[in-house]
Length: 198
Image (cartoon, rainbow, N blue to C red; front, side):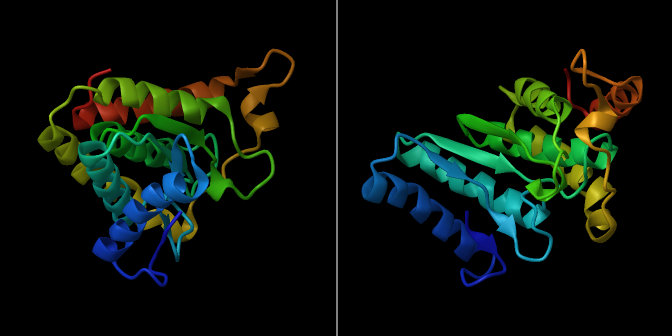
């Protein structure tokens, strides 16, 4: 997991480090696949404009020139039951799918550091967006991403905390609350308005 803004430097340099970590995972550890996830040094997120570029370029390069399998971790700034969280996960899912990533490794909302702040609804959005993105032209994916990322990136410093799993789901039936279903449908509608066809 290279850190953008850390010792590796900028976007291009961090992409080179990311590609090297893929290769290193196989050479040094005999890994069968590599779990990636470039992280932004300031925001602690994998869904920033810069980290999406790094992840996309690194995976496209690995996919083009090797037979290595690549996965990616998802760390949105926002917590569950927020539109921002779902849009962040969607941007990363589109990037990963379009760049040839084989393994999408779920969504750890609220940067993956807050207890009970991950639910299945974020992973559902990740999966539905990946399925909708599969087969799209890169130019179309980029158009949608160019419109999608500005919808949430201005809120990184004040990302909504969201709700805990227990507040998002009926814990007896393990089904999402009506509130979360409405938030989910609202985020999905926003993606459709940007041009994603589910």
